[in-house]
Length: 110
Image (cartoon, rainbow, N blue to C red):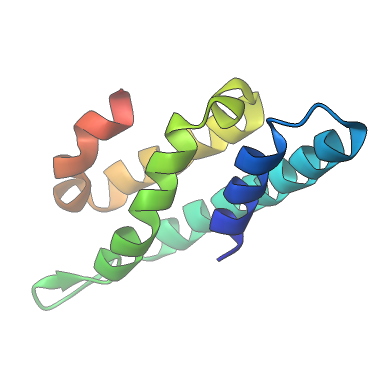
């Protein structure tokens, strides 16, 4: 998953002050921004339920730990573009699946 590998690269390289590490963080940050933008659009177009199960249930289960890790990563929180895209994803989730996101809401606002 590109989001997880980008986040891992940001976490690993952000402790290194070399020029190479800075460029790796920048590249990983741009990839993370792109992944979050794609995720937002995916959520936007998946607003249907199949019986009792929403089509985003499995997606949310898979991506929620990554979204939580992004929100707690200090490098990501300091980056205006990453933070903006993360908030966009959370907003889209709240619009599309409020019942699924409700139990996690306290994690979003912390």
